[in-house]
Image 1 (cartoon, rainbow, N blue to C red):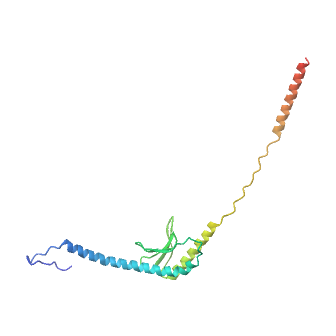
Image 2 (tube, one colour):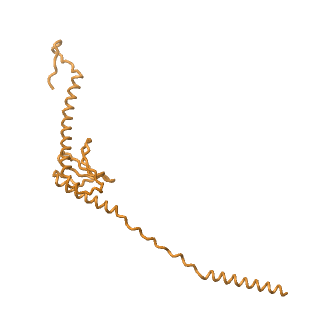
Image 3 (cartoon, rainbow, N blue to C red):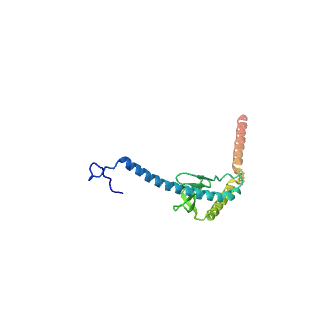
Length: 184
């Protein structure tokens, strides 16, 4: 900082710094820093737009009936190029490196990382192909297994025979007893 200003009233004493002047200097410094941050963010968005344009031929080949992919650039605090619901590309810490990541239930996985747009396009191409194959497997309905008709358990034929034999013997014994009682 410069030397404190002196007022004309007391030439030997420093003039008190006004809060308003200090706030004005702080706001100017913050605006300068914000300008740098905005410029970096704009550069990130521009690089993501370049990558998005490089991905156009790939997504032109995806059939219209497949609605897995929803590409777009989100412009939040961290700009991202979304490929689908779980995969996106963002800029690395140096703001020149692309990071292709996928969010999973176990955390974020880095699928590819490079300064070269072609490397990221290849990684996205592989990812799109894998997702389309996964979709095909999920859409195939396996034939329902036919339930085997189980034969009813075979019952033993011995017990009904014995029950019929005993019942018949008891009936004959009863008829014999009745006949004996009548003849008496």
